[in-house]
Image (cartoon, rainbow over all chains, first blue to last red; front, side):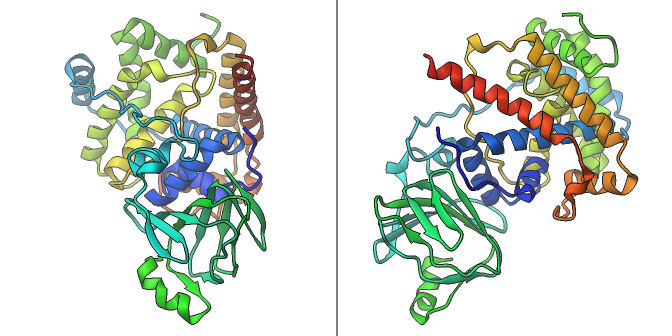
Length: 216
Length: 185
């Protein structure tokens, strides 16, 4: 496995470990970590901080009934075994995404959004939206800025913009100040996971008209 | 076995291994008495009321028992592992949303961690704990807010200087070794 070159920010790693991110952002973090040992190690190190805080924090007294209840749960509790991941391996979609599309890449319910671009919105709750994007090789996504944050993780192919070249496993973290026109690499159709926490802003009129249909 | 004295973090490793391998209820009670009040405090600081926190704590501790087989002392301290279970429960209950987990690295049965790795990881966890305990009050509060509350975390400057680097490289090393071992198959 070649290591990605573009990584999660410290804020995202901390938020994932602390459990304070919206579901869609958790999904893209979990997907990147599935492909990136560096960020996996960083997440586990941040979990260790959580452990140290729990060990060290002021405790709150727990009733005897709570212990009795816990003992009852371990002796008699109907224990639902942790959900086993049943989806077969897929060369493009890591396990967290397979759970959301309910299978492999072939099960993704793409919707055309024009000019050969397809998208599939994934079911997440909360303030951010996750979608899979399919961009034909060599295609440019219209120039756009962001009101909020846009996270883009490459799963297949590559794209490039002002910030550089992004290939499988690389994540781009675009904030409000970034105006960019990502172009898919010519060699292969590009599949990305994109997460936004606010609608995008397109510069041209036509993309702006298309925006309600894209739901972006 | 038996290489630790009491009150060392690794003591909890032995305790959890007794739960994992022997289904030892006395060990569970011991673990419960130490960690349940901490888990409850964590849940209450995250916004839960006392009754809900206690109910969740009960479930978290029962989950520790049921999932004990998944505990790997070369990758996490007991406190860290319990923290991740409590955190996931917090997301389920308080935030009512899912937390997707990364794809597992296939730790095979032959990759039983060796004692040196376990001791190293546990010692690093202990050092991290000491470092956090000795932080200036203000910095410590920031970190606690980021983990326990729902506050923005960009405030947390790098200046806290926590020795995350060592623990990170340790985990990285373990991952690299595993990949290397799998390549040879």
